[in-house]
Image: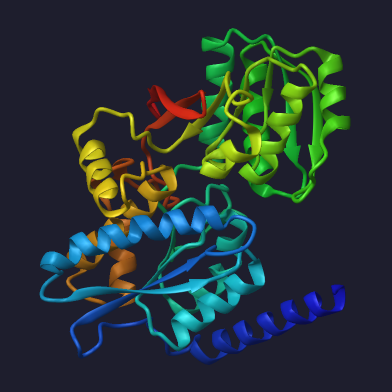
Length: 392
């Protein structure tokens, strides 16, 4: 199995290298076709370990494109070309390669995770095709070693912001003096959030009494949780993804750990409730990009439209960020007055004041949105709006 996996990765890299070598000198990205459509790629986790994220993002994109295409953009319709990256980095490479070289998309939305987004960056950069991740929050997605990836953008805020929001909430609102941190040691997302949380929590006078670690696909967390319980923290920060977090929360409560637990947008999936159980999730919190309980008119209009399309399903943050990503791209295409990828990139970079469901979109010099975050609390298995936090 290991040999097969390595062979698959090697082939993916070879294919990607071929695309970059073949297109590097002459490609300007996709253009609108003669049939009056502009093609946008969606390189998403539609199956595999974090399929819930990719599926939710696509639902949001599909709703947005239905709305946008009622009038179109300068007589053109937007057409989505989806690709399932199966929650794997090698498949994300394959997806970017196919979407650019075969499907001739003008831009790509995706991936959901930071790792699968980063797998596509070199291909997008080499072919001058904008890559927009709705939910890839790692700070090195748009900037690497101090250099801007100028064709890479995101709709979400970045990990350090989520970590500092969590630290502020733990110390100020929950009055926590001590905290435990439980991370996925193989995840850039988890490590980045933990680092920013620890820095601010300690700056505010708090003490990290223990840090424990796991890796993705682990299912038994009793040993680490027993160690955490022994340190008797006031608060536990678990910046991971729902597949493991659901079991962590469940097993923590079974061990008698009843202190507040908190994570970030990686918790945001209906699967979390199935894995953890409604009662176990009481007294847990997450930082997130949006809440369906927010009274803002734009939010409530989106919730109404989403429920009408998806049989009264309440939209989560991944739905909202997928929806906003489609509108972000559409707005750039309209301002560019063209389906040329380079002109779309320039318009994306100049975005300032675009009103979206997850907040007013303004980009900083590193292509990161400057906007508010929300804190949600789980009560009897339901996310409830707690507060909105300004980036100021």
